[in-house]
Image (cartoon, rainbow, N blue to C red; front, side):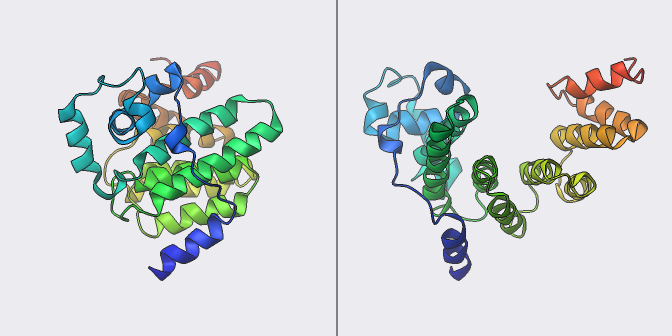
Length: 241
């Protein structure tokens, strides 16, 4: 409990009051939301229960996610609003608005994060979202602290590794970013196309194109959807599949 309080004070000192109860997703935001966000929105918020989306998610689906997500279910709508606020922050060119939206991401996701058990299946995703928001806000130290703390508890989730590697790469620490991804491959218990893909990308940038090709082949054999790495290998004359 002491650790949770300390990390909350360290990371979220600038957290704002919650806005999730008045959140209205756009049509696109609704479309890309995970099913559990839709289920919570239409069943756990007044604004959602009175929205045009009311009745679009069955009671059986709502019950399924309430059971599956356990402790995260109570404050889930805050985390889901945070997802959408991050998208809005990325899209806006207004720096004042971007800063405001990123603060909302942190405050909303914090609300859910602090009320969710450490072993919850989406706890690592929340940590990654908070880290990303801090990173975009220029608070790299705080972003890495969040990820390192979560990795000390949940080291089986690939998104934590890809998020940390991206931040390290943005700082110019390409070798350390690669090391983080390689560590993820060892510790994540299932094959991860995401880890394979980003390791391939970073190795290509490092100049190790043969190793990059090997990881690319594994990523694409698992159906990874982004073609940027494949296009780089094609341009280098290495991809002939």
